[in-house]
Image (cartoon, rainbow, N blue to C red; front, side, top):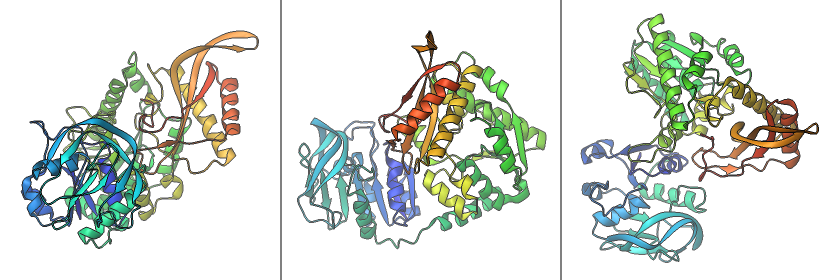
Length: 503
């Protein structure tokens, strides 16, 4: 196992993902004591990026004792600066900040850079830098504005890089992580089958004879969570599907048809009017998410009272949900309804999230291991708050119908055209109204925005280049078939700086 010590950066779970790609188990933890680190007994430790400055009084720093454990340590960005600071180097504000793609030049032989091109493009994101390396460290790489872009103490297997090897923009990143795994002496024998079997056993031991209610949306995350729990607790599991009125066109009926066939004690709750009432007049995105998150919990509490005392609530939370909702000292990007959107009081003994440390593609792998059909495993992602965050501004029944119809047209034409490999695509309703002309008359109607992205981990994403002829057909159908829309836009923005969803 390799331990990732989290200092609050937005890419930190990508680090765990890069390690796992090498078939090595990895855990992410925040602010661990040296006693807990010794208990975990890692083969290596990675110090992550973070938003702070290591020289400030309230900054998080790794315990000095980890440098006496005798295991390899890799510091990334803030983690590199933290290593320098703790071991006696000097970190100060940089005269020139570095953001985005930067050319790195390897200047000294290094096991970390074995097989890596002498010059390569890497992703930088920092305002501080290491001015003086600690004693016995050598500089192994530089950039134009950062003389110590990488450093190491090879005798102790301490390595530090100012850039982010975990993001796809660093072209040699995968090789750098593979080299660190070799430096740690890991066996590369962890597989998804191990995770599934281990998680089922953990759930059995944790829950025992307790009753479990699973929040089932019909998406891949909650479906995999439901089947995991079914294998762990059997008949003690009840799966509740809440139709909050914010689903895609015909989706409620489709989910009910699919999951009624599973042995999951399936219950459907029609709550569209209830959710719409709570959202009336609300325009602020975070407020919408929190209202939806709280109302979900209240529905689950009511169902649990009807079926008898329920000890545990299970959610299909995955790690991108957690990191974007704010982990440790990470910045809150947006509160996911099942993480940051939860109310302060929840009337369950505990909330169980068996997929909390997995990425979307890893969840799909887990689903295949569990024997879920491919049409569920490969299903298009759909956020828990649903169309509530694909409608900019106030949510109304009229707007819900508009975006449902536009999204159905978009999905239908994408399927007809055979466009492949889209990680996620959907229509959203902007709150912009603009002048148009139809039938020689003036219109003043809404604009639909189309979104499609390419990604594997959903932490970063590129806008997909959908063929123009497909977009043209979609746009023509939307403005001709949907009353209240006279304009269609295509979102070309990557993540970052945008998120995949609109709110």
